[in-house]
Image (cartoon, rainbow, N blue to C red; front, side, top):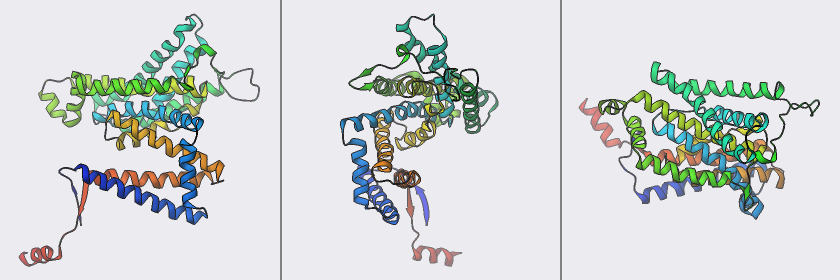
Amino acid sequence: MQIVKREGTSVKQLIIIRLIAIIAAVIVSGVFIVFLGYDPVKVYSNMISGALGSRIRFRSTLLEMVPLVITSLGILVAFKMKFWNIGGEGQILMGAFAATYIALFVDWIPKYLVLPVMFIVGFLAGGIWGLIPAFFKAKFGANETIMTLMLNYIAVQWITYLQYGPWRDPELKGFAKIANFPDHALLPKVMGIHIGFYISLILVAVLTWFLRKTKRGFEIAVVGESVSTARYAGMDISRIIMSTMLLSGGLCGITGVVQAAGVTKTLTMNVSSGYGFTAVITTYLSGLSAPRVLVVSFLFAILLQGGSYIQSALQIPQAAAEVLQGMILFCALGSEFFTRYKVRFARKNSVSSEVKQS
């Protein structure tokens, strides 16, 4: 048995592989549900109903999708360049930190400019956090995976220090929490959904144009394909790496601003909520395509929202719901693998002939 890379995958093959993955996910997770003592059909229907069954639930699913979309776009830019940015969590937190500073401690900015400034400093803070490993990668060849991962822990400890230390709200005695944002620092809503949703749609369109139509987008793709080719073409590799990571971290920083100003309404550890790691999966499943990020993130949001709903509706334990989500996700990732590789079984006749020849 050999695993070989596919030379090309037709649309028909892609459809077949996806269908097999869906069937496998239904069967495998169904067996697990039966083992727990529940009716699989009832669980599946409640998951879909919990995510899409009413206007409120649908809005909740869209809100769950927003941080996945924006963070995935940030991760996508880095991955396009073969820079393995696993630091989305830290970049989200630093973006939220910078936005919180503007919202709570800067009072000389006109109220109508507070939100725009929050987005600008959030982008810069996340970008600078991404620029740190990019600098060491470009200048000293440091391992970006380890560095971005380490910076996540530093960001987490920094936010924890602020929450339990200098930024702790003195009015909340005995409870470590940073004060809520004033009203002018909160994201306004349009049709019941905060504007972060519409910002994510705009970012998808802009990033699609940027990667396909601009010189810098072309340079990112070339560096990702072959550093040697990019260097031979006269491209400044270090500059491209650092500017790309500034953009990548900045987009993740925008996620922090959106979550802090639109969901938590303050700075907490829940601002990131694992989106930096989850976005690695959604980015991979999207095939590094910005428009596909939108679709994959929506489907993933349905899975998350539906998983949360069945915990309350059917009294399924949280751990069991997460295992169920993991099984479905595993099948999805498996299908992505088989779109790029195939398993080839050696025939017995060919094997025996090779033995005789030897």
